[in-house]
Length: 393
Ligand SMILES: *Cc1c(COP(=O)(O)O)cnc(C)c1O
Figure 1: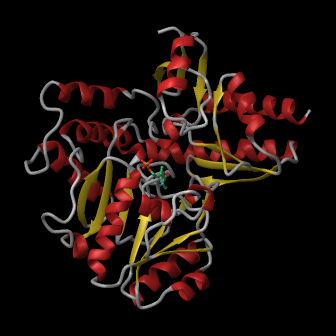
Figure 2: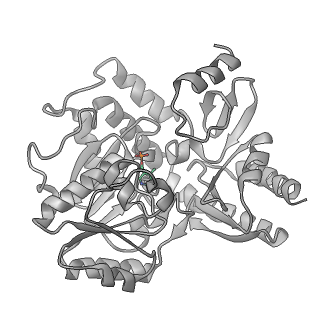
Figure 3: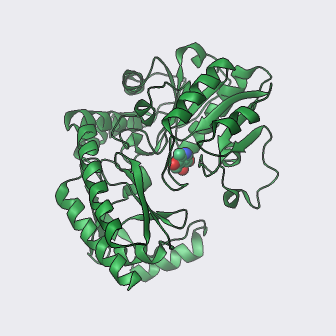
C-alpha cells in the first residue's frame, strides 16, 4: 500500500473515533520510532503508557517468541503455567490477594464495579472524581468525571457519583447507606497529571475502612513502574482493596488485570464474571518479560533518577518561558501545565522529531520509557525548547 492508499483506506473504512495525526509508522525500537518515509522520532509518549519499556523491548520480544509457537490462546476453564506465574508475580509486587485477567483498562474497571456490587449485597453506589478517566465502556464512562466523554450516550448506568479531587469533605458528604466503593487514580492521567495529596489519600483509606467501603485504585496508567514505584499507591503507604491494571502490563500486548485483597477476592464465584481472551499464555508470557526487565535492568531506580533530572530540566524551561505554569508528576509521569493551548507546541515538536502528548488542552504530558537516559532527555528538551520559542515567538 502506498501512503496515499493507507490514508484513503482510513478515510473510507475506519471509524473516525480518533483525532489522528496522519503519520504512518513502520518500526519502533526502544524510544526510537521510524515512519514510512524513514524519518526518525524520539518517542516521549510511547503507546500512551503501554510501551513503557520502549518499543519492542528485547525481553518482551524473546518471551513472546518463546511462547508463540507453543500455545497462543487457552480458554479460562483450563490452566496455564504462564497465567499462574503472572498472578504470583503480581501478588508478589502488590498485596496479598487474587487476580482476574482481562484485556483492557476499561474491562478491568468494569470487573472492579461488578466485584464491588457483588460485595455490597445491596450497596451499589460508587464514588469517583472530577477529571478522572476510567475508560470508554458504559460503567467506566459513567465513573469518568469529564462531561465531554459522556455527551450523547445517555442514559448512563445508575449508581455512580462524581466529586472534586483531593477534597475529602466532598467524599464524606457524598457517602450514604448505598455507597460501596470509591475509585481513584492517584495521579490522574488524561485529566492533566493531577497528583493526589497524601493526607487526602490517607483520609480516604480511613473513611473506606470505617464505612466498610472498598477503595479501588485505578493503576491502569500509573501501574508497572510508571511513577518509579511498581504501583503508585506505594508512594502513599496505603493498600487498596482492589487495583486495576492494563496499559504497560503486557509490554505492548493487550492485557488487563484486576487484583483484589484476599478477603474479598472470592466474591466473584464461578459463572459471575468472565473474559474469553483474558490472560492467555501469550500475553501472560509477555507480561512476565516486562517484570523481568524491570527487575534485571533496575528500571524503577532509573525511572526515579531520570524523572528527577527531567523535572529539573523542565523547571529550568519554566524559568525561561512564562507560558509554563507548573511542572508536576511522579517518577516518569510528568505534566507541564501551560497558560496557553498545547496543540501548536505538540505539532512543532512532532515536526522536529519529538513525540509527546497534550491532554486537557493545556497540559503537555511526558511519559518516556523507564530505561530513559540523560542523553535522550537532553535531546528531547532541546526540541521542546525550540518548539516553545517558535510557537511563542
Ligand atoms: C487508559 C486508561 C483506562 C482505559 O484503558 P483502556 O485499555 O483504554 O480501556 C482506564 N483508566 C485509566 C487511568 C487509563 O489511563
